[in-house]
Length: 207
Image (cartoon, rainbow, N blue to C red; front, top):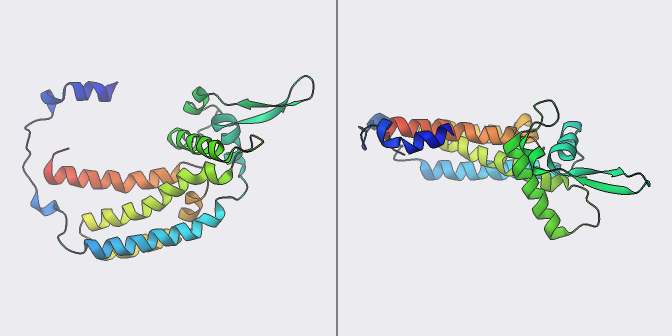
């Protein structure tokens, strides 16, 4: 509601249509292709290292999220038959477990990924695919490596832009976040994008 209100009153608070440009914060003129090549190598390295972990069994918090916030679980009815109880979308939107375990944006995307896999694979039972559940985290984690390279290049640190993504790609915690069903890799992607957007705003002051 706050964002919609700001958008509706945009012309009253945004200021002049063209802000003065700060040339000191302009993007570098050179090094972009080299940084992009190193970033692509780092992203490939991260993908190769993380991919084998995607089908590992769920950890306890992952399993609880899938059962209570994302998909559902089998239970026995009064006659002793197995019945699958599907999680409602309302439960996906909320912290339903009493603890901040359900990272809502990630859980929503992970539920869509699982549903797409189930529509294509059409498994006989409603068991969850570990790989499908973790696929959004995998995509975010790999993209975060490239986003870090872009941010460091954008602020004029080409050597760091070539070196840091490789370190991030092989970092054990980043490897874990990229291959497990939690929202941390989404945060790692949003951080450099947010900082890069802030630099761009200070540079030109436009959308």
